Length: 144
Image: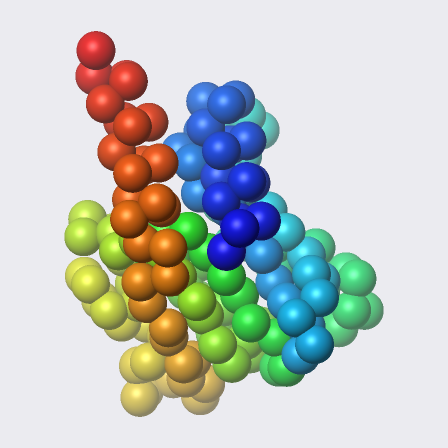
């Protein structure tokens, strides 16, 4: 989660919502990483999780990331949760909940939907206060 938080801070620095994600291999090594770049790139799909999955798949030479873990500072949205399921990621470790758009248990639960052909183990609350504080500070600064 430490690297994901660093990436989130970078995203906030260039004006994107501060979310960072890393994909780890079975030995805990980073396969791919991403920081939100939606605003920076003008790309609605440039969420941290999607960018981390793309980088991990490119490095692995395989779209199936079935022995990996995705670590992310904020609960994935529906798009990102769908990408996680499609990539066959077996585990997601997340920091803060997203009560407005989360798709890992708060608003909906795409990751553990029994109707899909793949379900994901979800570990919640890792460095939650730190992840939530980063988001809160980002949005408070924009309201001022």
